[in-house]
Length: 329
Image (cartoon, rainbow, N blue to C red; front, side, top):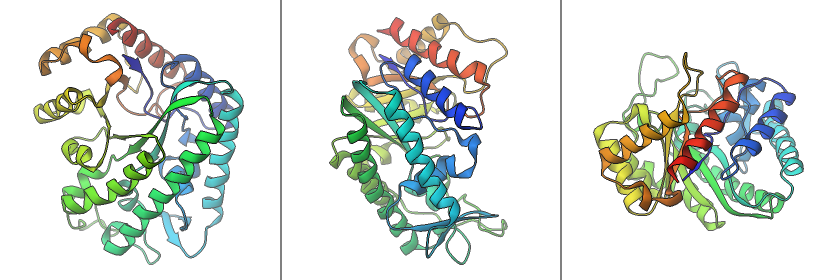
């Protein structure tokens, strides 16, 4: 059993990013990841990162958020420059890295529910626009994986985690319109699956492992598996009885489940590694699985990203996860 992070780390400047890389490479020795430090501004956030990866799209940052444009605006160019700069820093500090590594990118439905069309309102409101955005993301992810392979030649297992916190709201018709008085129409599961499949297949085509993360309730885990996800990442605190069953089915099929078991915010009293270990064992007993049969298919993580954590908690949280994973092994 191993441990990893969801993606984001605390801080608000370049020194914070450098420290995040140091902490991640030092504490998550089995599955480190490319840190995101969204405190540096919108170009460094989850959406800015994903839009920096997209291929052939122009985007600009407006007062209401990211918007599609005819040409890339200054903030879009900054997002791409910042990603390249962060990758340069990672490459320098991760020389000689072998084994496994993970990167994160916002998924097509979270982007469609967040990014606006050129004339306003969300991309989600336009069937053609949301298709184009998903296909652009898929092509961009291909290039991103190739770049990572070049920068980290010793890494054998590369994981791409697609973040879809808005997927449940998209399927449930709960994404608000620009006015805030209405809701966008529900997207039907076949279309939701198809757009995800484009991105996940692009990951797999480059010999990387596609995972999907969501810490939102009512995430459709079966749909994600059907679209090609070979890893599911969830917050244990938000799971329903149906969710427990779906994740157990994935583990039983030999796929990966990432279980969020340590708070992403510093608790009043931090748990011990023994307490975290016992919590995981109780969950396995609940779903009828034996820890001895799982190997590295069960991964431990924080409940969500650590962007809102204090710098004094992010390192200990990752250290706690690694110690708990070793106990379970």
